[in-house]
Length: 261
Image 1 (cartoon, rainbow, N blue to C red):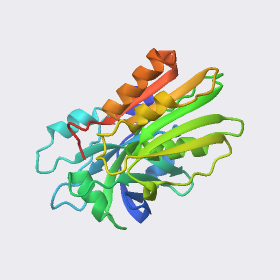
Image 2 (tube, rainbow, N blue to C red; image 1 turned 135 degrees about the horizontal axis):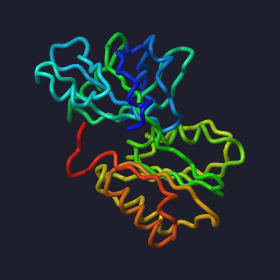
Image 3 (spheres, rainbow, N blue to C red; image 1 turned 180 degrees about the horizontal axis):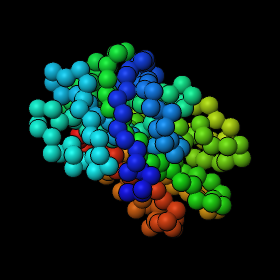
Image 4 (cartoon, rainbow, N blue to C red; image 1 turned 30 degrees about the vertical axis):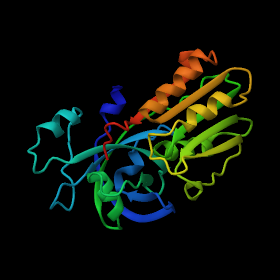
């Protein structure tokens, strides 16, 4: 962990707005006076979220740099539920940010909170870092993910400057989950529908990528989502496409065999 990351304390943030960009997604706007010092590093910025336990109006937050050890040492009845999410939008002047929650029904404590989120509720936020770091001099970018990576993908695409060339592949349930992005870049956006298959069980991303006509030149690849999909994509890029490992950022957000909501 970098020194500056250790110095980013958890803060209590209040829900100010809840929207539904698509049927399976809740976009929650969170505000706090301390968010002008959030330490936003750019698109794909990871934020630790702390949810209250049953009977609490607000979560108990860690106060030391060794926050995880502190959380684990808390009595179970007050220990917050901790999950990782991506900042979809950050506004320093307004001291607010958006987090997109994929709605998983009642599958876990974070999922239940997202289903019921409304203005006035409180959760904790702790800024971490951004994983999106394009290779200097890359000729084009390849961005791949499922709906859990869609908040990061949206922020990445909208941040791309004019002159950037990118191919984007996103696995989603159906066309109702498609979104529009405002970008100055030359972006080819491909929505891959699972057509009834459960998330984490389809190979549509790997199949589509194997058949895709990709540009030549040096590529920077960013891949995130279900762990099995991410592994398959990275293996294909390295073994079959000859992409150097150092040109690929990859992150398994979740596992179909052991989902954590």
